[in-house]
Length: 238
Image 1 (cartoon, rainbow, N blue to C red):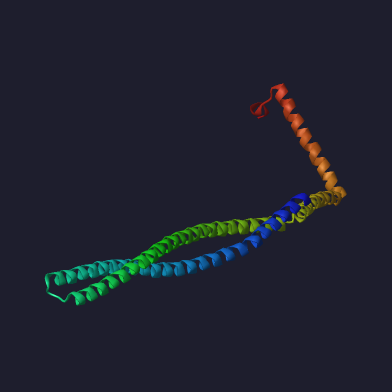
Image 2 (image 1 turned 45 degrees about the vertical axis):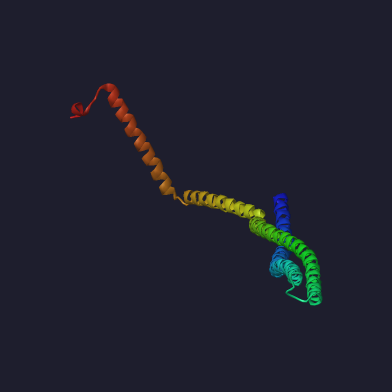
């Protein structure tokens, strides 16, 4: 019995230890999920901002490209006018030169904006990957949290069961059964003692009457058997 009680106590201790060791991981996991969701919110905000910059950069790239082409066309038109005599050649050269300078400025902006757009596209790609990773980790941690909570429930149930089993005092139960047996035996002995006492209280007259009645009954039985042997019956007796 003591061995079983020790085993129950060991099981109870293990259940308590399991619960104690899992309470902190649950809190840590819940906090980790909250932190990840905050990170996800920030990452989504950053992703939206960088995507907006990337879109703007592409628009700027298209604008600078169109401007460079436009200044190229203007320089050509001015030179053609001078060639036709519609403009002063010196003035036409000056304006055409200014148009080409503007063209070159926009070409430089195209190069700069193109490089910037490529960097922004890379950042968008990295952030999108980061967002997906955070979402994956949130899902994984939420599943882990469910598992931990389920384990806690099982451990608590095991703890309660082991506690109940440990609280069962088998030795006292056996003692109670032994006492009940002793009491029953005592009652049986007491009943027998009262029977003996009743027999011992008979008077001499009671004993004589019992003896006479017994002999009389025996004589009547013998007479009946004798009559039967002799062939007597009720009619013959009449």
